[in-house]
Length: 431
Ligand code: GAL
Image (tube, rainbow, N blue to C red; front, side):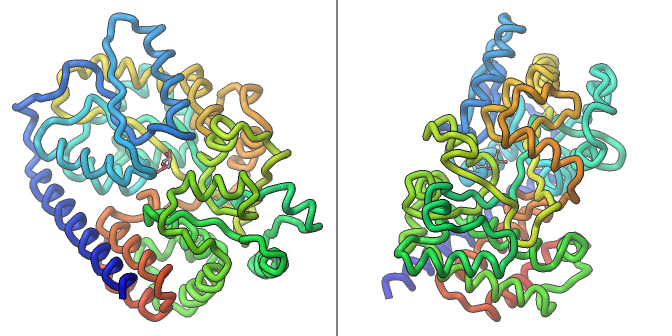
């Protein structure tokens, strides 16, 4: 009963959030230039990188910028909450009120292009790319993710990998286990761990995007790259037997998670693996930043990693980018910041701390640890898949509804209901 009330409350919160996002998107489409400026006049860098595992890279980048530009006052305007849970709502209301931050974190792909660019809120940056000679310094696929109709709208600071299964090495060694690469392997290992009283898989879905991340990984691992892409283009239906199979697999995986998942965030779940309270978790490689910077774990000694089941040679790509909103006062300074962010020095200050790899292809590989080096190499060889949970694969309206559906699924484990909800939500996908 209590769970039901809790669930209803959550559904309401999502409904209200989705409605306010739609409202703000509607009023954005009229897109006037800013006439009421409320920002401090400082160069405001807006993101959700605060606290554990998140802020070290940003701080290093800001420090570098200050060294190079001591006369430009800068303000770190980060709003806490993983994956932009709170920051995105604050940003939407500021954009709606014609009070954009000088520059803000936005994922390449749909979030940028079908969101702020389509609403007429961003300035193109082709001139900056030409001036900095960036057109052949970022991979073409990445430039495509930040472009619409031939215009480039933001500068990628990183490439995160979203299909990583992290595991506690001691637990695996002590129990004579190998990190699983297939779903069968996962369930085999999970059963053995469960028998020993060890929680096989840590989840912290207090913010629901983490559960969506596991689901998108199961989709990629089950469908393969081509069909996974078809889903977001509306070319494969959500009631396809393959999607149903993925939902069944996900349901089975959920029987191996910690019971207190809904009260934990992603850091709390990662911490379970770090401390040996759980054997594995599935999280983007910002978790590596958290393991190393905050929890002082040693790469490939205390924790190991493999691609999530069935996704070897696949790279679930998440790229954090920054652009120039229309109507900001200090556009020249913003471009100055973007120049540093897009430079080799900027990328190599940020990424080794963040857990990500550089977006540029000519960064200094020696600055990266064993995980980073391996990921830089694998990125070049892998097939890319855009993340749904992080807004690259599909428009915000769909992501919000998918998060809601997956969140209900984690509690109710009703495959048909999940398929129905996703099918209904698919009207939000681009035609
Ligand atoms: C993602 C973002 C990452 C990381 C993560 C957790 O959306 O791209 O950089 O911050 O959220 O908050």
